[in-house]
Each structure stands twice: as structure tokens, then as C-alpha cells.
Length: 120
Image 1 (cartoon, one colour):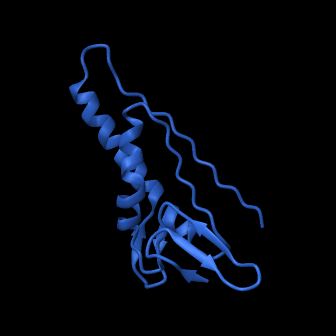
Image 2: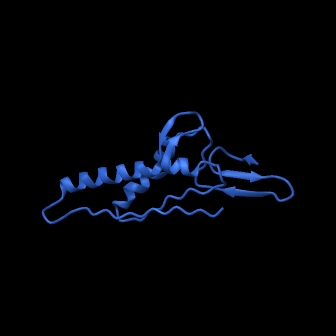
């Protein structure tokens, strides 16, 4: 396994050589702050402009999906807040700001869904 560049391409070498491109990838020393700021915050803001958004964590068992999404104590002993609680706080902060600016009869309504699948 070789990181071809620092952020978007990984290549498997050997008889079954393959390359995989990603929008972004993060190493084990990445913080929840950087993941949220780089990938998720702009999605939350775009929801208030009429777009839908999905955040998906995918990977092998033990790779950090649940920690990234839910938070908790990480491998370095530091407690970090996950993506999900950050999204909830961010959504309601924006909704509160918009409701304060709303004209009579206008309101912001929030509907959200969360799904966790296991297939082991």
C-alpha cells in the first residue's frame, strides 16, 4: 500500500495492483476538528441553501468509523467529539440564527435521519 499523494490517491502494489482515488483521506493523527472542518461543515451549510447531504464512514473493522462519527477517546488518549454531535450542534445553531431573522409566519424546520449498518 502506497500513498501516491498526500490527500487523494492510494495505490496497492503487487500482482493485483490497483489504485483508489478519494476526495480526501486522513491519517491516524488527524483530529476530529480537521475532519469536520475539511469535509462536513460545508455540507451542513449547504443544507440551508436547499441541498441534501450525506456523510458516510466506510472502512475495515477497527479503522475508526464509529470513533469518527460518534466521538470518544481516541488512540492517543484524547477525547474528541465526533461528526454526528458536531452536525447536530451546527444545524441547530444555524436554524436558531435563521429563526431570529425570520419574518412573521416563517420558521425553520429540521428533519434528519441517521442510520448505522453492520455487515460483519
